[in-house]
Amino acid sequence: MNDAEFRWNDWNMQHKTRKKALDGRMFDAMSDAEKQRIYDEIDRMTPEEMEARSKPLTKAQRDKWERATKKKMGRPKIGAGSVAISLTMEKGLLKRADAYAKSHGLKRAQLIAQALKSVIGESTAA
Image 1 (cartoon, one colour):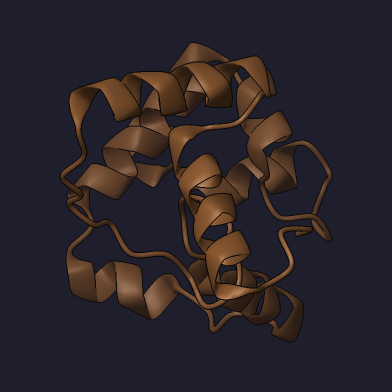
Image 2 (cartoon, one colour):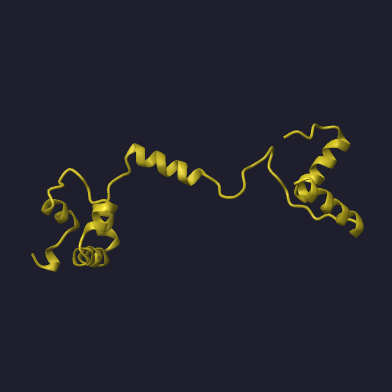
């Protein structure tokens, strides 16, 4: 078989894995020459040819895709979320607040949030 005739599904036929599609582990087990033939074939394909060879996602794949794309990156949302604010404070008070927060294992924002909740009468447990 010459390089032009090679198809990645032929690898499955040669290795008697007809029922299994080529997966990452099988690809890793291939020789460098076999991998290069697959790369070359994919590079030669037009977008239309690639689309013609593709299949719709299965329900399991579609569900996995939906879960992956719905997740938002970043910090977990607490309550209704958070908003960054700009706050002006006297330097000495800020220094004392930071020292207090550090000694109590809090972040500055946590200390300020707890202080606000105590002033407006909400529970600080959360």
